[in-house]
Length: 438
Image (cartoon, rainbow, N blue to C red; front, side, top):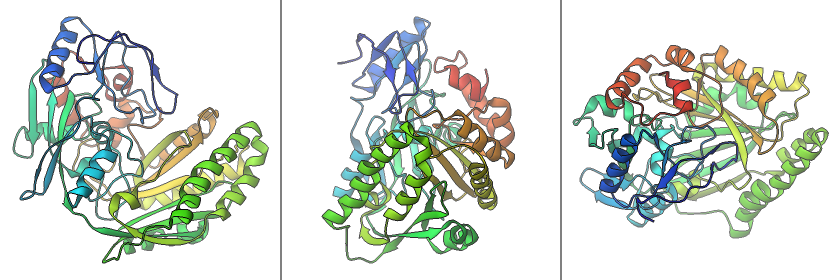
């Protein structure tokens, strides 16, 4: 399929909580075809939205106009070993980029724990992992190319169109359709992961030390219990020591996906059983240590489908906020089958990054797909906003432009660039109207 009109069906995201019915779909095979499709849509008075793999839980990519599928805009354009960069087409899935870089003896510095997303989708919504010193995937961008509302191909970096570069690395799809991204890379290295159960009280009281002592620290708290599972990832001299095939399958597939899927299904049907299931689940995972190349340590298969809300808080506020969440769950009738995830990031310089200008910690709450989430997410969101929280752009939240302008000091800088690049809102939709204003 090229950029000719395709018969459209309803588009649905990964979690199944967002659907859209575009007038037409295009799958451009080149930047030129994409630019022509954008110009034609504007002439027809239609709005344009690119979609990736649908791993966002918001309607950021939903459109009633022209849906751009980037399936043919994939692959590596070039590797510059002198500059230590890789330039990759926007529709390339992160898992393909990671594998290709590994074959070349290279790696990204940090990444999130899911690698199904396209590079453009992941960076545009601020996808991140956890890190004391290394930030989100978008913070590793050194240049990008995008097609703007009039069909112009715009290249930006710190030297070329720097005012666009300052905001476009996390652009929410509001500034144009990204066609290529240049990432900083480094020689491939080894990480040793140490996973270990700890009590909620031990993790929260020692949180600052755990963050400072480890390059990448994260933990999961199991609601209705005082149990957590912690993960520390640190660079290692080796040798490589991946999880054993059987033990790795038991932890990553049987426990984290297979049995967890069954537990979630049982919990959805019989909510009263969830606290008992949580106590069993939180004790099933045992301590383990393994060493491998980065993407095999940072990322995990996620086959159990869920909906998620995540807020970035000033790091100093994270423990207090998490304790408030625990107290709220303990006194409420809510039954929560999914662990709560806590990660960190250093401050960065991207206008709409959730870590823009401040050292941050992330608190993410999830519920099994199909479980009513409004009561839980609303209660958590109330706690997060009281601490000046910034919602993840690709995850469920109810914030609007008025709130976001208060918690992002550079919000006006972003909207000014948007007004210049897309005055007619060719790339607009209902979600962007809510979070950016008109």
